[in-house]
Image (cartoon, rainbow, N blue to C red; front, side, top):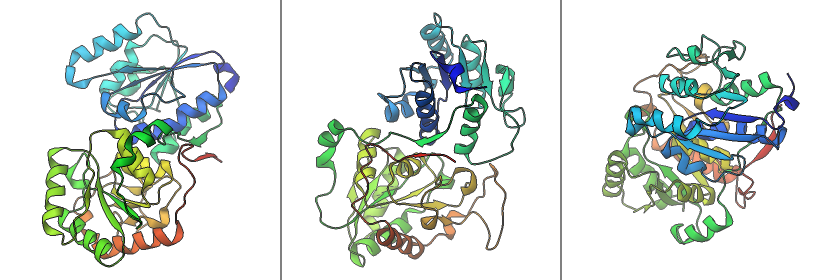
Length: 357
């Protein structure tokens, strides 16, 4: 198959959640746009990650799937697409609900994962599949769809803040002449999180010993708010509290930061995409599958594996590993980030563009 087959095609992408997966989908979208500039790309997505990628220049149309609406969400997707016949559907997500959405879309070609990787019976909703390849990094698995289609993969996100966003959010960034470390304090799963008392100890090291301004970033879920309150109560030095539901403001803050510290969650992958030096705290999830993609591996703290363990790529979770990470270990990586990747950085309005080998 050749990329020329996609000229003028109507393409639908089913990737509804989560924020990190949306970041990994962006190189796929940009690669399709570069290979077939006159194609029309529709992305079925949930409202949460949509707030991150809304208005992206490579996407012609977003169709929202609001899972809070229950079965009405499927009806709304059907209503939004009932008059459209797609030439190709890419089923990047393997959950059952995503499979049902794939089934609702009209297309002669519905490309999905091979049967082994298409859990939740997702393979039942596709009629064409990528070749079996076993577990790999999520980004590489998405690129397999491009290889199947004969589309050259581009490691390009175009996630960075626009000029209008930079002007709108400028006042939210700390006024300081010191380096700024953005600290992500929450995730979608408690087991992935680093303890709040260790963040407090890290804040005191950054502020009191290293001359680094600490800024708390992320959303405003009850768990994140509780973690922030604990950090501010225990730390002798008060960090900037920049927790905010606005994902585009989060992009701006992470883009401006000198270093990002984050467990495995959406902002981590956004930071890597933006080119912000990222200290990844990996313990619960396998970093070879969901860790920083091709960037900042020298800054990653791998508490997932045992010393000397050559673990395989897998979706296996390992409980109790995040507690292995100490504030001293993270502070050392922050210092390394500031030394090896000093500002000024390349502007992230381009958000890191390079061809994938």
